Image 1 (cartoon, rainbow, N blue to C red):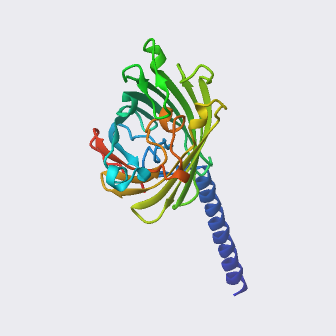
Image 2: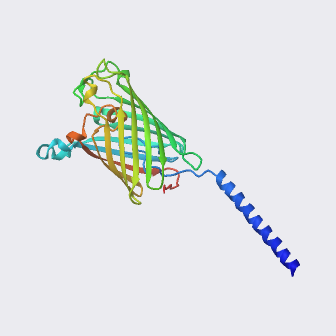
Image 3: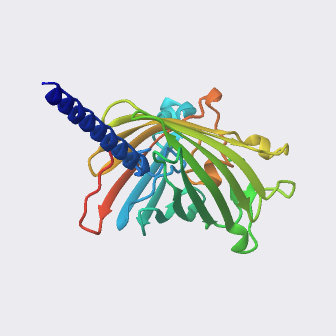
Length: 302
């Protein structure tokens, strides 16, 4: 009996040792495996600005962005802004899962814009954030001598003066299934400014976030703090603040929002926002994004 008891103890110890060794091997394997974070945001745009998200490879996103007039424009004269409309139409295509290119056209200043986004770093169990680089350009095609919302009259001598460029780093972290936050250091370059005493380069820092309310609805907000000068023209502009909702309905995302910015490209909403929330210069608007697949595969974000 002593022999049998000794053998049983040895076998039990050996089995326990093997199990512990196997669990340690599995733990080490799981630690070495990279698990990437998905669906930090539901769309490539937060409200006016971009998110770290890029279009999937061989997928085309069609954007319709719409802004009504100011809420404080009155009921009789302007039906709280609903009589007015500004619109941007855009297309963006995923060359890879990390690289997106896009173009768009806005009715405000009759601007054509073009851009590229590259997701350089992805959040995972090894990396705490996602980093996407964003570069864009915009060309004003309105007839020279038009009047801007600030009251400035813009006159161009050639097409080079009509160009504006923007560079951003989009840095975001998904903290859990409900909360994602993003910061957006930004530089904008104007080939021609509204007045000779204004600088051609502007620095700005954006902050944004998404709070998931349920499976298909989320609350979004974004704010851009711009480094402005003290000139009379620059003091007519204010920082852009926007809040809204994302509604996911299968093949597209429907975004409803309120903002003090009527412009829908960086040149306009970061640098040239004339509205103020304190004066009820608030514009109701929406974005609709429809995705078309050209590779026969359907990709879903959780």
